[in-house]
Amino acid sequence: MHGVGDFVRPSGAGRGAAGVASSTRAWEDVLAHIEAQLISGALVPGDHLPPERTLSAELGVGRSSVREALRVLEVLGLLRTQTGSGPGSGAIIIARPSGGMSSLIRLQVAAQGFRVDDVVSTRLILETAVAGQLAALAQPDLSAARELLDAMEVSGNAEPTTAEFLALDAQFHYSLAEAAGNEVIAAMMTGLRDSIESYALAGASHLASWQATSSRLKREHRAIVAAIEAGDPAVARATVDDHISQYYAEAGFGTAPLTPRLTPPLTPKGLTHG
Image (cartoon, rainbow, N blue to C red; front, side):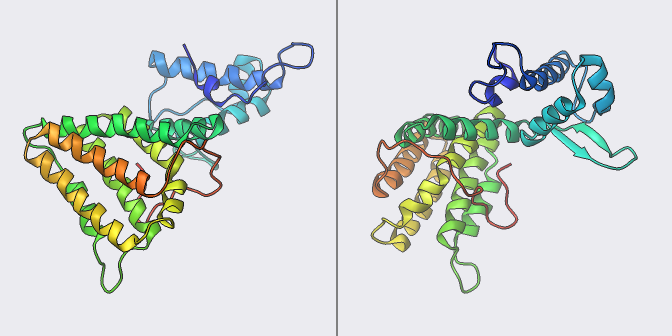
């Protein structure tokens, strides 16, 4: 079974030239210890971790290794650290599972250099399933999705920029997963979408007319919502499939491998990826 360290360990890390455990291995031991406590319920969201010196003494590792492990957990969204004194200081376990999982998926996709069309195909599997599941519900809550659709329209005298529109598009799809109530799928969708969003933005420059494409995308978004509200899983799945497939085909995506993205996720002001 994989632990947190298996997904964040650098290639070749953990062993020195003679095959002896290096200092890199020490922080993995700290991660494994904290992971075991989370699994057993000894640690729950809101709990403080013991001070660095206590963990260092308990596990027989240096304090620098403890700090390295805590930095990894903070990057993955599982931990919040704050200096100072009082109840809010120190290292605290936080409940943001989707954030950590999304980060792991995004990093793994970038590191492995998966083909763009493989990532898109995986998106199709997940997102068509979400649409079908929502359409099968008696009263799906699509209020967040509708708010995002309204935000994609002209605001004042200006339409959203291409980057803003695509960020709203990503949030729309994420809102459907949230409405379906499956946090795992929502996190996977976010990680996959984030891993190729720079490609989605670059692809917009290859379109014959961004205005025509964005207008079509808005119509398709509303058609997805309509199919879900009509309670027709087959139509909802097909509409999502066509919607995603057509954009990537139109933008000229192929089988090229993904390369690490150098820019942060595209997120319009006031919105996050959960």
